[in-house]
Image 1 (tube, one colour):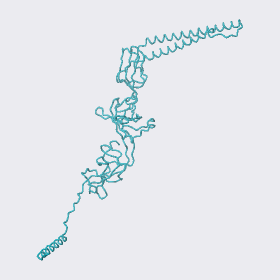
Image 2 (cartoon, rainbow, N blue to C red):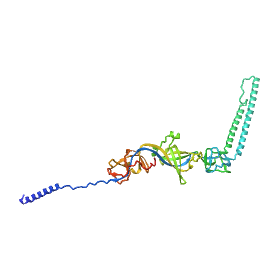
Image 3 (cartoon, rainbow, N blue to C red):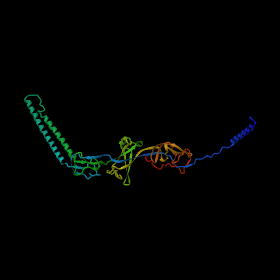
Image 4 (spheres, rainbow, N blue to C red):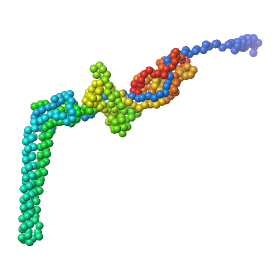
Length: 399
């Protein structure tokens, strides 16, 4: 290499070495650590307790027993009861309608005469049969014969026919008496006339409807229940038959005031409705119209739309929380012992628009954040200005 290039290369190498040495001796730039801000939140303290479940439903009041009363005989309506009006109350056995019975009384007399005539025929044939038997005995002795008399000779067919005529006459009399009795239409139960279909002076045929009625001893309400509610109700068939079904409180807004009645579930309809996928249960309220002095504040009239609160099971070892604490995937934000946020997945067994019941995932006394935070992160420091409350401040709408 020519000597004229050695010196510049040496100077360049020394300069590069000095630059590297100076770079290595420089202190790295300092970075300022960013501290997470402490968030002010509201919290509640989880408290393990029991919860009485109440299932809500709605329905309309219907009669347990309703009847279209018909006339069993033809005739002119001669008399009606003062209670035979729409909305009229009646008691079992009350006479509601009387139909002209003159022709039916005449038929009864004719049938009675036929029975008497048939009885007379039997008496006559019995006497003739006895004479025939005696004549045959005398003839048999005179002829020294051992041959028995025929049934015809002893008039047995004639006597049998006379007895048959008597039975026919008696059956006809029984029918005529029944028709006469059916000219009076009586109430089959304690009830109310929903609609009057015939009136005084009107001719009715056998089978003509005269009134639509229903019983007032008991009213029923069909209540639809989705399958998710069924685990919280004791619908054991044996208990229902024994009258020990779940208690129900009904309420309705009438004339600007809320009235209430109590009853119980007496049966289920046994199958799910194919369209709505609900199971109908039937509740009963005794004496809905206060006819037996039940002292309801207001009659529970047929057709009333009511809200129902059904007494369900009592759940043990559950935690009640506000609905607002629940985030996606059944998570809640808890506050740790060092006052930082920590997400926890819980098992929610029941919820409504206001609160939830948690069966697992939380411990008694654990702090739950109730403040709605934007994109919180695990470990975010928090503080709260007042002592945590164990009160949720609401009832579980369906509990």
